[in-house]
Structures are given as structure tokens and as C-alpha cells.
Image (tube, rainbow, N blue to C red):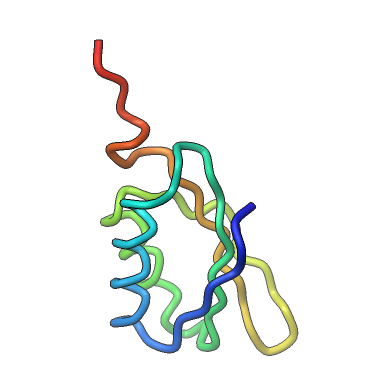
Length: 80
């Protein structure tokens, strides 16, 4: 699993998820730290729009980690 990253806002998350979608290898996972679980629905939507998969949400004290995997981005598409 790739090193942990953190975001403080939905805007930061959007930028990070776009970056990860372009950079992650197919099947690679990363943990992203979020501080405000009340915005989880927005993070989930951004993960999906970035062609990534939300695998799990792990609680870590007052914070949460989104476990994200690259399954559907262009790096996972096989040309016949």
C-alpha cells in the first residue's frame, strides 16, 4: 500500500484524487486521512468520479482513513 496522504477540504480531495487516478498503478491502494467524517458522502462521490474505488473507511482516533484502490482508471483498461 502506498504512503498515507491527507486532505483538509473537499477541494484538496478533488485535486488529490485526480492526481492519484493518473499516477496509481492498477490494483494499487492508498490511505487518505480525512478529519471531518461529516463530509464522507462528498469524498465518496469524488473517489468514484476519479475512476477510483473506495475499499474501506478506517477509524483512527478522531480521524478517518479512506482506503482507495485504482481499479477503473485508464491504467486498468486493457486494449484488445
